[in-house]
Image (tube, rainbow, N blue to C red):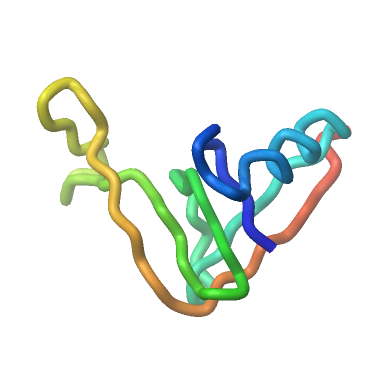
Length: 82
């Protein structure tokens, strides 16, 4: 499964359907929750996420949040918001 909050990504429609049905996706990379994930693909083992500084702040460059793509064992858990 591929989910993405980026409208130009192949996983965007699936993400929209989840939100429309009142569901949320929890993303894990190598068993660690990924709070700042904007894309997750459990088939290719890839997560796109916001970069955090050593102090836990969002890393910002030229008026945009820096992003990184990391690979590993990706697990996507779908939960109801209600």
